[in-house]
Figure 1 (cartoon, rainbow, N blue to C red):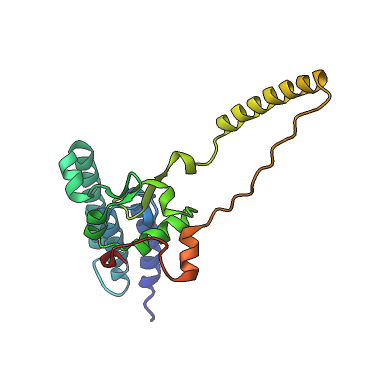
Figure 2: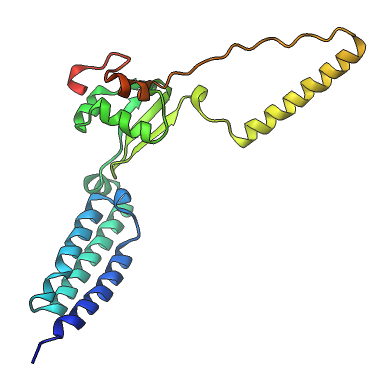
Length: 214
């Protein structure tokens, strides 16, 4: 007689594993802290073991302890800034006031090319457009652009529309009082070079980068 106990074990593992992972958190891998990543990997490795062996409910108990430990650690991080710094770490400044922070870039073992790659993926075309950039504890790059490089907001656009309408009204009134309407000045076309993308094609930086960070 064939043994089919592995079938209900597999189904039970999927159900309990789904429950434990849902309780542990819904963050994606890129948003997880180191502690969350370790526990999630541990749960995944732990839950497949009872299929070929014994100790099904003991395994579920260990999984529950892992999730409970994660809860306690997250609670302590909320209560204690020192514990949070020890477990999760703090963000590191990579670009400060438009300048590369070589000390921190070297400390986090990142190259300028890797930093540029992350910025390109965020649609940043020039390194000089970045005012501040940080490496977050979850490994993501956070940044803020210089005021001159920031996109126009809806409020700014509406304000610009009002100004244009005011100027238009003034010019129409001026044309009515003077038969010779003022000629509109020609605008010179400006081309913006996408430095971070251009250097990929040229296989070289357009600015001086310390050799130990290349």
